[in-house]
Image (cartoon, rainbow, N blue to C red; front, side, top):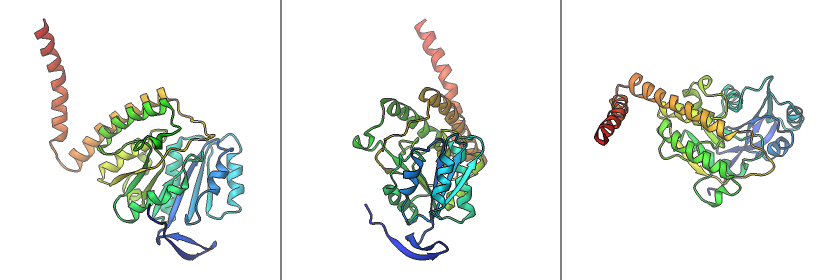
Length: 289
């Protein structure tokens, strides 16, 4: 792995570290994470300039803990949704703050301490080197990287990976449910943030929005890290809901990218193939009879 490169700089909060002369932020969505939010925030490296922590309507002491930590670390900026809007909505709130503060790269780390900050350089390096506009973790590259992942997670991930490839047009990506990601200022200013799906499934939806504008996406192998956190996802319902979302997104991508932005035969070929399916079934049925 590339050695981390730092540059010393002066800021209002004293002398700190800057990563390769770029302003790096971390967006942390949190919902009822009173047990894990403190170690999560305290593990964020010194070269991160801003940490936007968005409490998404927690009912426990999550926000009180965030405010307590922020009083000792000026980088941490607490924000609270009065009602739960969804993890996607919390991340979008953080992204908007990044744009307000002219951040170069925004990294998303969940509030449950599942994402090891040691991998942040691996996510931001391709963006700094102008090889990607958006990078995301991939836990499926190696068997060892999936250690601790439940059977249900693996099965659900496999189904949604296939559907997301088709819907987004990024056929080389895997593990689209992985929320450990980094995004460039260019990408944040290009896509329509308010159009991103607000619930679980936002990361699948975001990939479609990125593809419509031909933004570059890169997978970064990062091992899974599971500990005391408890998943809030109901997998059966989640897979069904996201599958419908991806179907709509596929049609949206065809319409927007290949009809509105530029006229292409691709949507017409797709419609033609779909129409051939019942014709083929009827022909097969008549032959059997």
